[in-house]
Image (tube, rainbow, N blue to C red; front, side):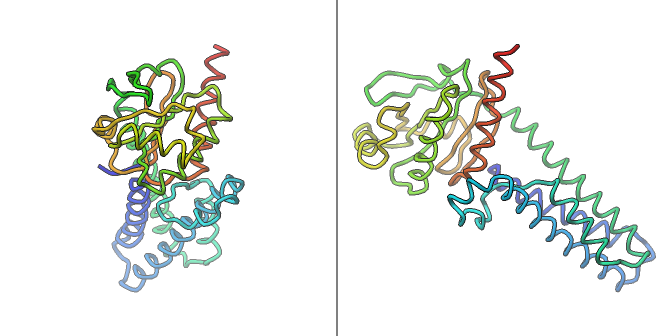
Length: 275
């Protein structure tokens, strides 16, 4: 099973492949040279589109990236806007002045690639809607109380799965603790995976002091990872007030992704309050 970040990379690659195949193979009377030109120009356009989509996302969320500029270069760091990518592709093709014989196949290729991208993302949305809800598993607080994630129903919740041995987990914990201080309408739960109460307690006090008074939960047998189908740490999952999975992120978080997800949850809270 692909993580959301891996899925986005695969979907983008599939869209580019479909666009290239359509541009090269659709016209039956194309010579080998014309097919090579059409395919090459479309691949260049696809690269321009990927860069433009990434830059558009970066510009929109520039305060988050300004704090961590190197994260913009991380390939697995999610974030892409199709509405900056598609115009860039069309402008590049127009500026390239393709011959009339190439315009039709390339246009059809662009449309086929865009449809493939849209279909892949729609499929992903459906899989997210069918994802497991807040699990009915038994976790423990540091002081020994038994808690189930189901107890969080009624409020949006952000669940972070982490380990003290994971450096990326530490950075995510700091980021989430800062976000929690600003979003009192959202529940945050920090579920440790596979470590003892003593290790977690000492870590919270020594390394990430912001966690000391927050919802730190213990999961020594990693039940949450299995129940939520998580493959790697750190992992952050966002659920709405009904316990439905809204989005998830495996690996070190993109701060812009977190802010966008929290904004979406806060909007849902406001809409619910006004209903």
